[in-house]
Image (cartoon, rainbow, N blue to C red; front, top):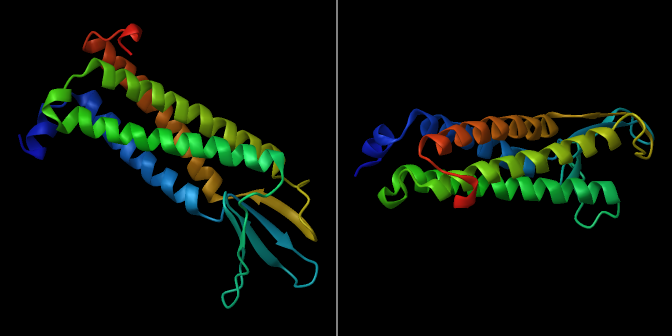
Length: 190
């Protein structure tokens, strides 16, 4: 069967979930690699220097020398928790996309009860992990976050993208539950 035939054969819920998960995985990748979960303006030394904090690195706004610093192993418990939950959410959403591809494009998996339930479970796991990551980051990375010489710190688009992934995965999980019920899947089919 062709790809177009597989898409035509898929239910409306499968199509919508597939599109939601594709958007979600794109946003998750962007959020995962960006250095813009939070910004802090540094006023000591060089006035009005913006430093962007991502999950894995921190970079300045100087075009000639951005002064990026690797944040792997940064010894802040809350930052490591954000990284850990973001990893769980990121891996889960990527597995969801893989399973959705199997569900729609592999004839043996079409209307698969187990795959449908796993997509739902992993969508909710991803949403939960991202929810914990964005909450911890928002609570700890605020105006009281201690950045040497910083007057102001705020969350940025990387954090916002992670929040969008969270919402999209909740919607995908709910739609997948509806799809699972329509094919007669039960929780015990996992």
